[in-house]
Structure formats: C-alpha cells, structure tokens
Length: 471
Ligand code: FAD
Ligand code: NAD
Image 1 (spheres, helix red, strand yellow):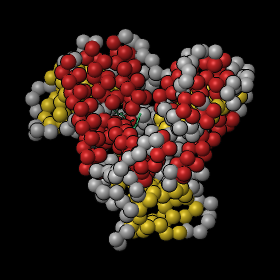
Image 2 (cartoon, helix red, strand yellow):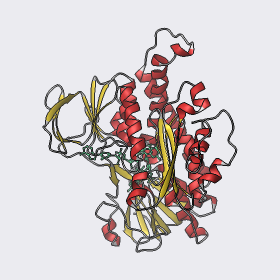
Image 3 (cartoon, protein in one colour):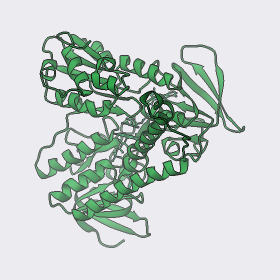
Image 4 (cartoon, helix red, strand yellow):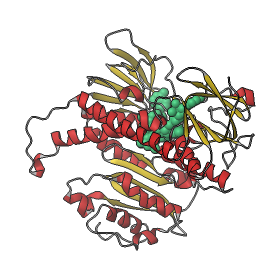
C-alpha cells in the first residue's frame, strides 16, 4: 500500500447515514472520503429497500385499483394486463435516477467516493480494498462507521433469492408465484405481501406474535389494518411459528406450529419470503484491531454524541441503536457532523415517524396505547374515522382512522396513529406536534383546509378533550 492520504472525515458506508453525513460535511468544507463497496451510492434504502419497494407498491396499487375500483367511479377500462418486466424496469429507473443523483451531489460538494471495502488498520487509518483492485490507505481526523444492516437469516432455510427469498429477492421476482408464504408479519412482510398479492399470488403471512405490524404499531391500529388487508385477500396465521422447511420437492413444504401449543400443520408454497427482521452489519471492518465491540444484538455501542470509546470514531444508522429507518439514519448523519463542526447536534428519538406503505398506509409517531398503558401514564384517546371525513368519502377511499393519545393532565400529544389514505403524509403533522410538545387542543384549534384528509387529524385531536364535529 502507498502512504496514507490525509482526510478530515472518512465514512465507511455510503447508505443514507453515510451519504447524508458526507454531504453535510462537504457543505461545511471538510475534506471527505466515503468508502462504499456497492456499485451505487444510497445503500440498502435506495438500492434494495425504501425506493424499489415503494415503486412496486405504487404501481401494483394502481394496477389493483384499475382492476377492482374503477366501475363505481364511472371509469370503464378494457383489457388490463400487468407487464412484470416493465414494472421492474420502472423500479430500476427510479433507483438509478436517485443513486446517480447522490453521485452528482458528491461531486458538487467535493466528496470523494472511494469504491471499495473499508477496514480498520489502526484508530486513525482505514484501508480501502478497491473494487478495481489494489488498496488505498486513508488517514482521518474523524471516522464514521455507517455500514448499515443485513437480513436476519431464518434458521433451516437456505436463501437462494428465487424460491426462498429475502426482501431483495421479493423486489425482483420474474413471475408471480402461485402461492407465497411470508415468515414475519412486520413491515417488510406486509409491504411485500401486498405487492405480490395484488399481482395475483395467494399469500399467507405467518407471524410469531398475536398481532401484525412489527414493533411500535398501536395494537388497535394493527387490528384494523389486519381486517383491511384480509379483505384484500391476504391470509394471516398469528401466534404461529415456522418450525422446519423442506425445499427438496417441487413446492416448498413448511411445518408450522401454534405458539400456544395447538396442533402442527403443513403449508406448501412456491416461494417463501423470510422477513423476520434485520441485524447490524459490521463484518470485515476489523473492529478487533481497534478494540471496538458490539452488544448482544450486534450493535456498535456509542454515547449520545455517537462516539465510540475512541471519540473521533462515530457510528450512525442501522448499525447502531434505534429504529432501522432511513430518516433516522439521515438525522444521525447530520447530527454527527454537527457535533464535529459545531459542537452540538440534535435528534429527538421520541419523534421519529414510522410508515408502512401498504394500501391504505399505516403511520405513527410517539407512543402506542399499549406502551402508555404499560408505563402507567394517565391518558386520553381521541379517534376519528375516515368514513366521516368529507374528502375521504368523496374520493371513495374512506377506510381507516386517526387516533390521538394525550396526557390526561396536560393534554400533551403522546402519540398519533393513522391507518388510512395518505397516512404517511398526514403523520408529518403529528410528528411536528410531538416535536413541539403541542397539546391536542393546539392541533384542533389550528385551521385545516376543507375538504382535506387532514381534517381527520384535527378532529381526532379534538376528540381527546371535546366532541368531534362530524362524528
Ligand atoms: P445501509 O443503507 O444499509 O447502508 C450501508 C452501506 O454500507 C451499504 O451500501 C453497504 O454496501 C456499505 N458497506 C457495509 N460495509 C462496508 C465496508 N466495510 N466498506 C464499504 N462499504 C460498506 N426505511 C425507511 O425509512 N422507509 C422505508 O420505506 C424503508 N423501506 C425498506 C424496505 C426494505 C425492503 C428494506 C430492506 C429496508 C427498508 N427501510 C426503510 C430501511 C432502510 O433501508 C434503512 O434503515 C437504511 O438504509 C439505513 O441506512 P444506513 O446508511 O444505516 O445503512
Ligand atoms: P420487523 O421487525 O418489522 O418485523 C419482523 C416480524 O417478524 C415481527 O413481527 C416478528 O414478530 C416476526 N417474527 C420474528 N421471528 C419470527 C418467526 N420465527 N416466525 C414468525 N414471525 C417471526 O422486521 P422486517 O419487517 O424484517 O423489517 C426489517 C427492518 O427494516 C425494520 O427495522 C423496518 O423498520 C425496516 N423497514 C422499514 C420499512 C418502512 O419504513 N416502510 C419498510 C421495510 C423495512
């Protein structure tokens, strides 16, 4: 290797956490290198996560709506067909456009993308094994680890991304499976189940817990969501675990068992999607050489300023604590740089929204009712159904509700939970309310345009301390 090059900041990983930190640091005039081994920037989110999944969700929803929800609107359509190849091409075009956009922003801010795998040589030196061959040594005043996460494997089922797939395979199937079994009814499971079910697959979701949605979703909202998704044709087996799988036959055969001691049964499927969570990814970093350790869940341990025990080495995104979400990774990327350039940064972990992009969407921020209850907090609930919202009714799209949870004494907004049209956009108002420590009355006394879906948010807030007008 040649002599080490000097940088102000070296970032390992060009996902959302890493690329956002790189841009923020580049804007502040730091000399930055970002080491990314993938052939495109943007990490999981842009390449095999948020973006391709939303492309498939959007376009399959449109297809499903054209098939099932046009006649009553006075729209008569002829022969409707899905061209899977074109569906995938549209997805790839979205991904490429966005990843190239980041490469452009890197150039604009004089950030060097080092194409290769990064590993520690010592506390201040990172080696990049270059994709094109050879290596480079980078010496840095500051180093960020932003290496993200990977799929948690399901023991006993070997992934081939054709028949036994992860989310990555589910974003690229070449044909619609006849029967699909999804292990895990969390966000990935339900988003991907929706995509393939809309295209005609018979989908069964097996979930270990007694409710769908993964961690954080309000139980009442999860129940409502399950009902809506069942009407769309998804089948659920809750309180159920997959015990073994046999992939030797033409169909994959899975033995499932009730977690409550019921009898076992066998389910056959053409394709099995394993979606039981993701785990931090640190392999190949040579963390031992600098004495850094991970906790029992594989997460790199940091303090409130993202510092490891070597204060100039910081960790951001999926590879450390907190929800594995792109916008959380982005906030941390900005804050970690601000700690260097300004001495202070800010992320409010109590106000990070979650969105599940099924149809309708499910979105929430703050605490769920079951959490508030478990914490022994005195609280009030206000709900408002979209079936009483004029815009939702006019749009013939009125399934779902908005739910506010407020502190019983102070009326402060503790949580906002929505299942319904545009929930993912509407939750921004709830997030702002939680961030600003607003009361429900603050939200309800704010004038909302008519007729909009956001009036359901206003009226749910009103329902915590008074009667809603339209329900
Ligand atoms: P990553 O995006 O995983 O990026 C880490 C990068 O580091 C990778 O590109 C990897 O190649 C690189 N890397 C790792 N080790 C090295 C090394 N040693 N040297 C060089 N490079 C290295 N979140 C949302 O908020 N909204 C969504 O809608 C959403 N949808 C998702 C859908 C799916 C199917 C999946 C799987 C995830 C989704 N997520 C979503 C989660 C989101 O993708 C992650 O939270 C986000 O990507 C985390 O960003 P990150 O930068 O921490 O890690
Ligand atoms: P998840 O944690 O959301 O859900 C996993 C589900 O699998 C849980 O409900 C869990 O109870 C269940 N499960 C675990 N083991 C099981 C078993 N043996 N049998 C049956 N069920 C089992 O994880 P995920 O859906 O894989 O998603 C991974 C990460 O990616 C999450 O952190 C999520 O936030 C992120 N992501 C976010 C979005 C989004 O924001 N829209 C989309 C996709 C992924």
